[in-house]
Length: 198
Image (tube, rainbow, N blue to C red):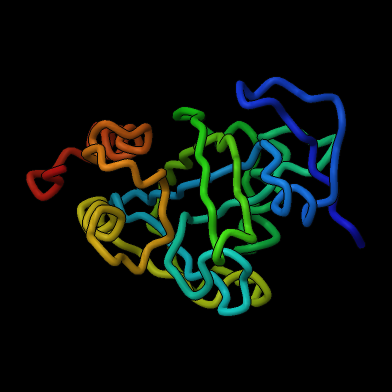
């Protein structure tokens, strides 16, 4: 079944039509996606490893959960759907805290995969420790999952030749000048620690 995605303008406003997912990435059409981060009561952040056959960033560590917003769906509906499909976790829209939205342009696979997206970045803060054994990983999308501290995540995200899928465009700016630094500010606010030296 062909997955259709609503196309948007570069400023995030609807373009008024949808296109197949393959066309979105062939032509570099702007579209919206969701990024969902899960942090448990111990301040540990869930990350997943992308399946080896994924078109973009195969076998790399990535956001707790992410996905394209399908045509006709909204951001929070998509987030809840992706959490259940990829990880087997059932949450409600009320569990989602919107941290920020931003623009990201990536050119991958020798220029044949154009990813022009506007992610809505959510945080779910659990009132209990997360047991990895409760996850039901969608093997077509996810090959592994683990918990890391915010500082370990920061190191993963910012190190050169990282095994973590890029969160921002590589433009030479310090990471603190990128929108995604807001995630680490939020984690540090919720779980203050001398270890979190971002």
